[in-house]
Length: 279
Ligand SMILES: NC(=O)c1ccc[n+]([C@@H]2O[C@H](COP(=O)([O-])OP(=O)(O)OC[C@H]3O[C@@H](n4cnc5c(N)ncnc54)[C@H](OP(=O)(O)O)[C@@H]3O)[C@@H](O)[C@H]2O)c1
Image 1 (cartoon, rainbow, N blue to C red):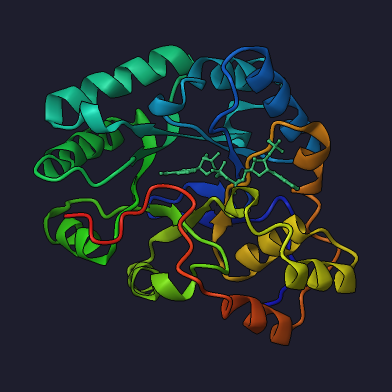
Image 2: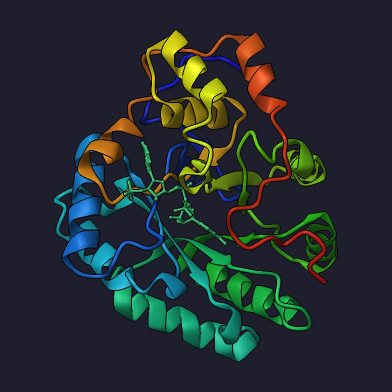
């Protein structure tokens, strides 16, 4: 609930690694100068946590921006993800190598299973555990895992996931209570993807009104709500002004009654792929 936060705040993951509480989403930013510029702008604005995936096709530029930033490697947190067609023990190990060749980093901070592909996800998890044991990745986790997937994983995992990355905003918060409760109970931190609803709700008159009350934009209200829930939001923008806007979240606090109002705006929104009911 409301607390004094700073952009440098972190959470501790299972093995002691620290993850910045604000991340930067890299989906749909083209590889090359767009990603380089976006990541450089984000670093200048104070972001120290970047989320990409093999599927996004921009690992090479993210890695280059991190290497050339002049910021010590250990001060930046980098995530990438195993794509659906790369599941299975051996295939996952090879996919990790491919991602690291693109990133050109000595180690990865977080490797996630992008989607709970049926029949193969258990073998893939074993591969992630091996990579973590070897120190090639500091933390491992999952994405789009619903409560039954998490229970299955916890039943066979030697190493529990540090993270579950799912779509979360006030417009689907109540729908994800089972996942949130399970993760909290098992000390799995939640990364909130599509925290800005891909723009879909940013013109909502009620949200705009709340923004005016605090002198903040609708995007900033959604992100501050996410931080105050204890989630790790991953806003994406390719626009320098909006990249800075989305990091300017630390000079105000949303009152408890307004946080509660936001939390009750559920409309089962899914602006990305929806893992509800995935086998
Ligand atoms: N694990 C998964 O399956 C999964 C799925 C989806 C997303 N993700 C991750 O989560 C990240 C965020 O999700 P997302 O990129 O889908 O959606 P999002 O962050 O909710 O929204 C991004 C959209 O909002 C616009 N935007 C950003 N800041 C804004 C602002 N202040 N005011 C108005 N519009 C703004 C962006 O346009 P501009 O770029 O033009 O500013 C873009 O169109 C992704 O980049 C990715 O890293 C993961």
